[in-house]
Length: 251
Image 1 (cartoon, one colour):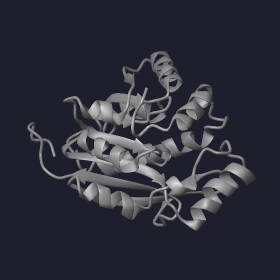
Image 2 (cartoon, helix red, strand yellow; image 1 turned 90 degrees about the vertical axis):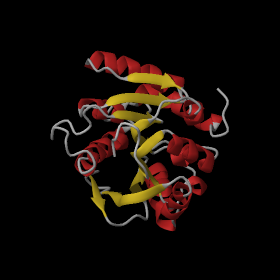
Image 3 (tube, helix red, strand yellow; image 1 turned 135 degrees about the horizontal axis):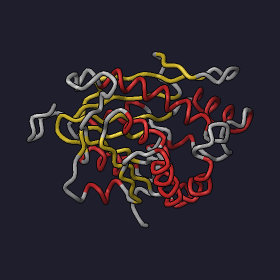
Image 4 (cartoon, helix red, strand yellow; image 1 turned 180 degrees about the vertical axis):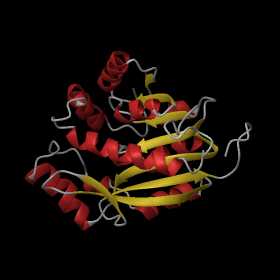
């Protein structure tokens, strides 16, 4: 698969890690704990946009795109919360594992090996685009993000989770997590690719998106517990909304 936004080295790295995605005590354990934190945050935050959904299924009947879905951790969470989920990843092994795990869990999730730009060429659009821990791995951030914007319906929501480009993030996410604590394989991240919130917001603004909420994510290195806070200097999430209203009247 060729694309302006794909970095072949990143794809190869995630293909090698594919078998470990669902091992909660393996190298992907941070994603499992992050996923639980984000799932609960999104359920609370997005219920404000779609208040007519049941409290236990806040994504009921929403069309959801999980771009860069990996082996489906967040896709499965969104499906259990009522969403119609389309999980997309460029790493074939990730998608194979995601399909297998969804079947064994009795979940109906559509998985596909594809790219944001290929999807944007079609007619399909989504109420909610989950763009989690992806933007720091793409080769062309503006192009990737613009395609993700195109995939979001007018009035729809896109949530971006990534790592800030600060000295503290270099110390925490690379030196600390990869070299000292060895929570992640060395080379998982490239500091130069970490986008600052202002950089993402500038690209989004040109596509008619506004930031509705922003929150930082921290971890206690002793007990390995993640929490939300106001500091955006390391991990952070942006909840963004596309202006307008789609033909169905959804906002």
